[in-house]
Image 1 (cartoon, rainbow, N blue to C red):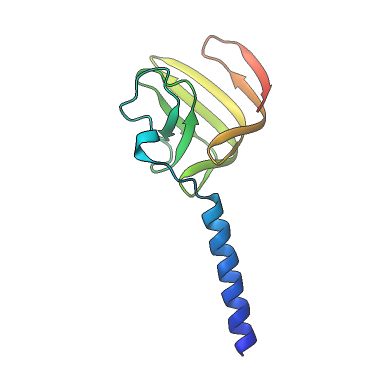
Image 2 (image 1 turned 90 degrees about the vertical axis):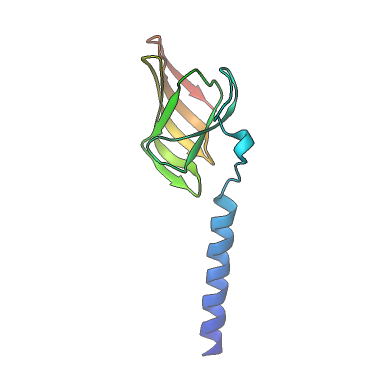
Length: 119
């Protein structure tokens, strides 16, 4: 019986450590709230309140949405990321890891250009 309790305790500890390892600590001073255009910052997703994605090109009135999941408080996994501002839309499809793009992405720029990139 004690072995079962220990096993459950170990599994719980592993799950807790895994969950903690995937949670990005985002300080309020690093968010996009109140930042000027062209700032780099963590932007809260309209599609997932309380979940953030890295924004490397903040624009006036910009919002972001994500079709994928969030792990902790950051976007994570495969999906489509949309940034909208001033009637413009920039879309990208690929993987986010801890809220930042990783690996191959297909970008559809606001000016109509399409680009395949690797992060």
